[in-house]
Image 1 (cartoon, protein in one colour):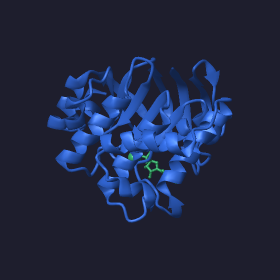
Image 2: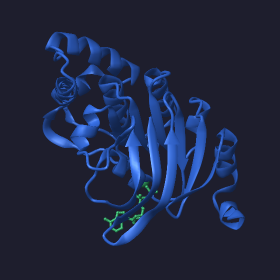
Image 3: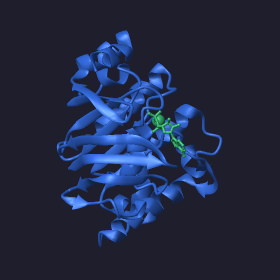
Length: 248
Ligand code: ADP
Ligand code: MG
């Protein structure tokens, strides 16, 4: 699904990722952990195609295609989705209209028929019940006045509605109470299947109790310094990151 090959990434002359490698197979869930400022969101942003970052070397291949030059829109049409660490509010843009426009623009790019309003309502009502938000949220402006937890659930609503092939979830479990965390985990599991891949950025081992990740990677100073299973996440929860520096 995704092959990140030796990429070095900078922003405003500052190198953030250095010779980073990561491969994610079809149906796999990879977890990225790391201290604040280690480059996790940078990794998410360059995958979704943000133009703020400069990739000075290396290659990103998605479904066998070099995506470095593709715009965020083109990547979205190819099935890449990103949930933002800090979802923005867009006053005046109705959540339902936003979701339907996003879905139909992806379908159009793939020469598929657009979903009409009635069919879309069925899809989105099913999905909003999975994320435990009231249907009234669909008629409000996107994220406008939503609480932190409601914004994160709304990101999962987008995930379930757009059905991407590769989902990059940047701290979607941060700032959630226990109930909301369980709901977000349920949404991710609902989305997950043998064909869909996920990169999950998180600080907490707790969400991994609900999701069975294939790999856990630790990002430090712009590089993956260690990879393992859930036990690695448990060790981080218990001991923090400094033991890894000593090991390195
Ligand atoms: P994480 O998500 O792991 O907390 P980020 O990828 O957001 O880390 O940031 C990695 C590093 O890049 C941080 O030190 C951050 O300050 C720096 N950085 C991000 N954007 C910019 C920018 N526009 N200019 C300078 N430094 C930046
Ligand atoms: Mg971040």
